[in-house]
Image 1 (tube, rainbow, N blue to C red):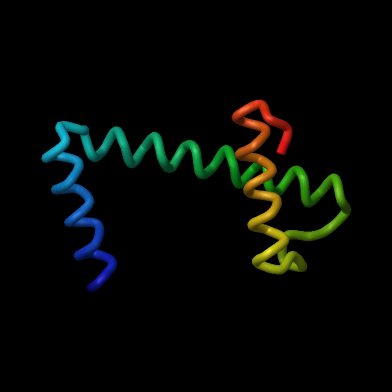
Image 2 (spheres, rainbow, N blue to C red):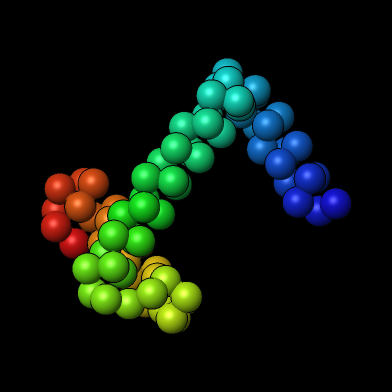
Length: 74
């Protein structure tokens, strides 16, 4: 229930800021999916199954993908 309350609050904040919450969520989901595929690709290049990565390793790969998006090579 708490997650639903949080989502409801975020939707109301988006509406207050005149942001279409559905479009914003779709964009965020697309970005997440693209980045996660990047994490999968980097893990595969390293020969490490995703399930064997620690949270810290996965987070480091996530940041690497984000840096590559920005063009700073991370």
